[in-house]
Image (cartoon, rainbow, N blue to C red; front, side, top):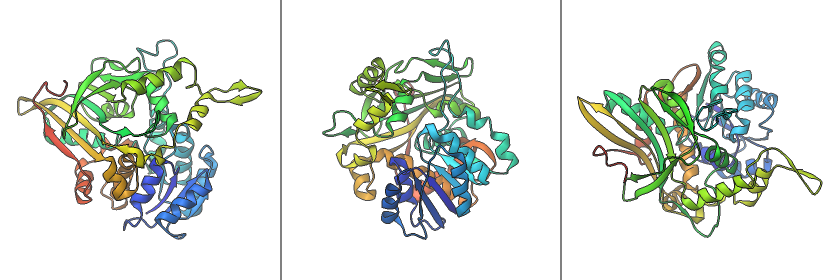
Length: 408
């Protein structure tokens, strides 16, 4: 398989490092707006034949198409932040390549009732082009990270193996991860962090369809396994909720994240004073985007691995009925920050988001997963995916929970 990897930030670097040397990978073109960054990663993972580099403006659909055609790639792997999803998505289609991303096209709040009604959903722009991808017999596989991504594989496995009837699918992300010596930092792209945390939160219920709530609504203390214990989680907007109901029959789908009171407070201050804004303002005669100022001041997530301790856990808490009896499970992936740094030279959240596209690429390369159109991972058999995790020693588990004990 020949791959064009667009974007070499925290997740893109992880994809490049974790796919290097895989027998199914013939070539991976490393493309970024910063050519020095591309060359640095290429030198670390390959050679000029297996990992050529290119400077690329991800907002330029024509440039994405031209580069994909130049190298005759089979797949465009999009690892840039969601602002640039659609140009890369369209460029891949124009080039006749398959496509994969870890984050989907951005949402747009309802113009008059943002905290009760959804506007444009995450991924809507991409799913609207489903027929165009089918007409070209090409696959666009959306949201292949840890969440969205593996959490949905867990949900699909629950539907296939563990339940006759599903009630709730609750995606939960938390753990006891800490960033030592840094007063304020994000574990992935600051633009994405601000976007998903401060947008209206999304919930789906069979009786109501999609609806929204204010950010950080309905706090709960979810009991994470392996000794982590109860951690406070809150609603934020996330792709899983927008995609799972398209495929899996459930009564309710939610996503909650363990952000911590201090981090939530910082985000609320940024919002209150307008530093989350994306429209330019004038400062001393210069046009400045406030969110870019924040991005320039916080540390790069890819550089924080040495400062991280503790564990990160992402999983799917599923409730329902099996053989006429109530059942409740939590399927999850856990990684330890120091272990991941020692083994892979990556920070844990980058590793979690990065290993999943590599798994999905293998399944596409060997023909285990096949299809056309715009799809997410719930549409495919979860078993081969989980088998690769087992083969490669990537920790994951499913535990039964006594009904009613998931929340402290």
